[in-house]
Image (cartoon, rainbow, N blue to C red; front, side, top):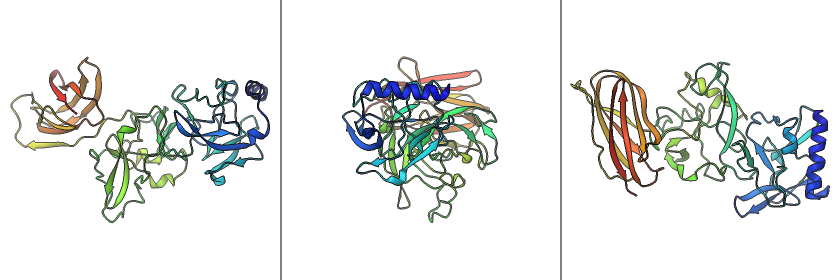
Length: 366
């Protein structure tokens, strides 16, 4: 049945496009007016990646291939600007073959009714047009630490497929919980520990259309360039050995210290205790400066320890991000908030600890 469905999808797709066999042997770079340079076949029909193909094998089987017909040729012709070493072939579950690019299996989208269509971009958040110059891609995968234990998105043992950033070859990118906004607090000045957590030194190229490129920047790390996302420096993990789909770093040195980089990660902050005296009561102070652009400091006091959160809300009351989310001892604290990824306007920040809640307004003026 599976082989029949795959054959049926291929017949239907070829009928829709009225193509010829020769055009299916070519992979080339085509400039799309919306997405820039993309991979297409010889007729200019768009090719796609599936983010769930974490290990390089295809997880699109059975009825999936009716909507997403596979691309395969045994006599591939490589277009200008592409490297033949980036192409390969996998054996699918039904014993048929499929062409890969940088280990990503290649597909068509059945709903692309005319040449140049890119209707498959961001379908269900897991299908993206194949590009030759991705510096960031998305992958849906189970986290499995270097200890062999499967972890969920909270870095507790458990089964859960989550989406996170990888490079163009599907190699996992991480952040470090002790880093602060656009500051690498790990790498030694002599790069003596760079083999453990190599910095991601790529310039920003293409990213999936769902990702906001304004959240990326470059920082200088002792003469090297490191890409950051929302102020978080990005790293590889040495024990992943730059292998596609590996994410062993999630449990090293303990679970959650080095999370995989995700699109919904909060902007990092530096939280400091600025006065060792135990305060008499709770207080949340007005930020300074206010209005601000793009950074401001929030100070607060808690007379007893507990789990502290400070959340940012827009003027409609919708949560924008979490600024503080951790256990803290009694004390006086300051936290730097960088709003470079937000639009100008009035926002609220609210401190919560146990039954205590207090909120204040502030203005981002760009």
